[in-house]
Image (tube, rainbow, N blue to C red):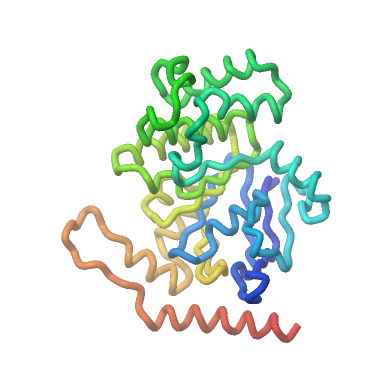
Length: 290
C-alpha cells in the first residue's frame, strides 16, 4: 500500500488566478524514494509544501486529494491536519544554515521534536538525539549537541537536519534539494547518508532535485514536471533506458556528462518547449470550460 498518494492535485496563486500545480497525481510507498525533477518553477517544491501543509498564504489548493496512509488530509479540520502531518511527516530543507535557529544550541533543535510529538521526557530525548547524531556519523555527539549552528560546517549542519528529520520515526520525509548548498564531495556523502537512513528506517521519501544524476543514485521512481504538470511518471531504470515524453528526453540530453568534460551543453530545443506548453494550454482551456 502506498503511504502518500496525490490524486489530481491542483493549486493556484489566489489573487492572480494563476495555476501553479495542474492535476498532479503520484504515489510513494513505504521504503520507496520518489524523485521530483524539472527546471526551476516547475512546481517540485510546491508539491512538497502542499503535502506538508506549508504552502505560502498567497497559494491555495483548488482540487485533488492528498492521502496519507489512505486518509484524505483535505477532509480533516486544520488542527487535525496539522497534528496528522506533524506526527507522520518531516522535512529535510535546502539550506542547513537558515533552517537551524542561530540563537539556539543544537540539542533542543532535535529534542523538541521528540518531546512535543512523541511525549518523551527531556533526558530520554537527549539520549536519542545523541544516538541519531552518531547514526549520521557525527563524531563526539555530546559536544556537537552543545554547539551553535554557526560553529559547525555546512556538511555537519545538514547531517543534523537529517538526524532531526528521522528523530520521530516519520512515515514520510520530504527532502527539498538537500544538497544544493554543499560542495560536491560533501554532496556525495550526504546523498549516501540519506539513502542509508531511509533504507534502514523504511521511510517513504519524496526527493526534490534538479539533478538527474542524483535521481539515478537515490530514487526508485521519478516524476518529471513542467509548468506544474507531471509530463512523465516512470521507474528510474526505465527512464534512463528511454524516457517516454519528448521533454523528458530533451532534459536527459541536456544533462552534462561528467565523462566528457568541456563538451558543449545541449539546451532543451524551443520546439519541445512549445509542444509541452501547448499541452499545458490545452489542459488549462479544458479546466476553464468545466
